[in-house]
Image 1 (cartoon, rainbow, N blue to C red):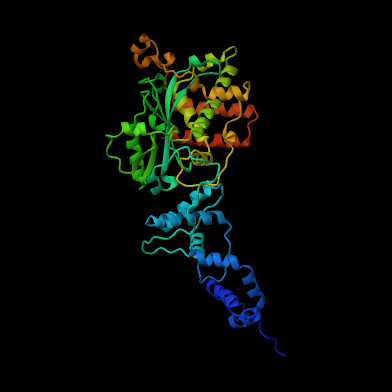
Image 2 (image 1 turned 90 degrees about the horizontal axis):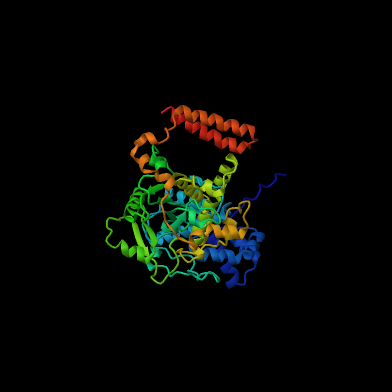
Length: 471
């Protein structure tokens, strides 16, 4: 006898599943009768009834593909949902959303969530199919959910400007002017010279602007022969922040990227810049006059200062170990403004993006809610040896105890030195000096049991130095 062929599986689309639910609710038909009408098995009808609430939610959302027969969950469901939310916001603002834009945004969201994910064209096609997304003429979509009130316990300290809603979180920036006693040591407040540091980041923490350091010295001796383009931070010879020049550069950078961004500033600063014109891509948004909160979260500023102080103490400890009998204050006197630029850039790089984003939310400076609750103490560097936690925090907040300014006598030099010209400066290192220093450093690593990971970083540095020597 000839065996009957295997029965072909018949899957129902979302629209057909809704029809099944309507039939079962509105008529007295049994599940078996409905199964025969749609030419499927009775267990399949039973599964549809079991998933009734989820199916109805997909149908009512307006975003699901109603002709899709199977719904396979993505491995990166969090990224899927976040990208769909961003897509709705972008279309509601009548933005032209393209495929490359979605791929870039998906990668950005994955980095924020800490997931190792690289979106591909195939993934984007499946994402569009799952969420019924198409690129047609501009139209305004109704968000799939109404706006929610801020979570309890996160009482905003600042009332956000109304126009902030016109920008995505990635395009909202805050900045802070931070006074820094750049070579002070614990217990010796009066010996430190002061510079101003300008920090700027967006409300997601995914973009940090280049650090700007300003000081009283027009031409510190330590800058002789140094290329400013090669430095990790900028220096301005005045204790005030050059807002006009800095904003003009910010505007040019955003123009090259084709972006329109908002910069939160204290109302007093915006008033000083009232006559500033020519900003086409950066919109200045003043915080309320009564607000005491800075436009960059104070917790972010404190984390930056903690990392700077930690790096400074590490450098001073290394100097003390090299020169026996040198006190901490004597070691600190050798710290130059050039050292400060490097340490400030390194400290700013160590402030995590997730922490910056969470701080914007918790201090009421972000335009949307973010379900993050980070322990701010965990973002601080470890307490240096020889200091208690209380002593280290007092050292971090040193500027609040006795603000002061001054110039570094060791760097300015005497009148005789200033009149001697370039002969009074140390000779600049040559290519041979750089290669010899690499050999010395590698030998020191070899003799002190360095980890393989550090050698990998050294090899990258060695390769770059050798490349520069060949130019």
